[in-house]
Length: 295
Ligand SMILES: Nc1nc2c(ncn2[C@@H]2O[C@H](COP(=O)(O)OP(=O)(O)OP(=O)(O)O)[C@@H](O)[C@H]2O)c(=O)[nH]1
Ligand SMILES: [Mg+2]
Image 1 (cartoon, rainbow, N blue to C red):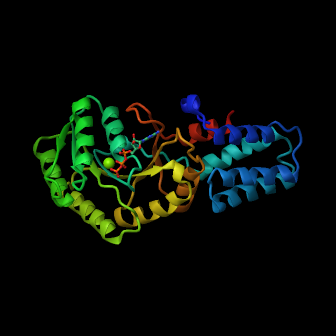
Image 2: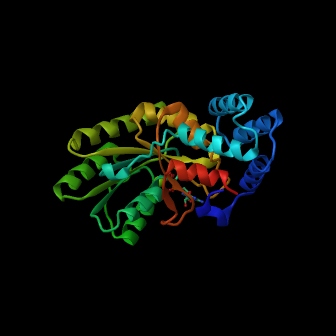
């Protein structure tokens, strides 16, 4: 699939890309080729809406004779996919405060470390907003030590909003460059937990009126279409600025990026493809599509 994770190509993607190549290599296309492409896109979790939109456009071009060989199809598909992502890349350089939200195990804390590593050289403060699990605090603490980053930690079971409040105060008082707030994992369907997150966001916005706040949702790309519902509900309670697609090194369904951007109009900010701190890439729509379509 992607050049930067080729060493970990999943079986699904080996078959996805080779089937795509099978269509692109055809000297003449027929209506079945488009049907085949349609089911391939659905299987990559692109979502029915995005897929229909693309296939309809390709069909129109096919009927009009603008697409006749596989290579034409590849080029037209590439343009359409890039267009679907709106060429919209979130530039995290515009922000100095990051709030990481997402369901349990989606990769928030790991991403916190990757983000801090990207800002190496800056004065960074972590806030351990997951006060429910001692292990969660310990995990972030471990990263703080390794990356030489300061960390604000509360007491066990302390109201997360109050730890985060203290973190915001310290960020201002001690003039840090970057604030990274890790939060507890929660299911988007748990209303009380989502309300708590809403409160946390309000506290941050109120405490840091001068800061540029970026709320990022980590999405486990292996969950496919479920992620769409997650993103929708997290967006309702926290007003997301961007999505971080994690675990793209697994059987990640690359199509989900299109479904999220198309249906929710939230840009993808980063993709993560491994547990190690350097396994992260700033999202680039054009590069993403080109790598997805290349063998
Ligand atoms: N393969 C792979 N594993 C990842 C990636 N990102 C995170 N992980 C692993 O996924 C697991 C969960 O990651 P965490 O960062 O702890 O997730 P979290 O969202 O903070 O989890 P909670 O705090 O429990 O909600 C850990 O074992 C990570 O090492 C990734 O991009 N690829
Ligand atoms: Mg965590």
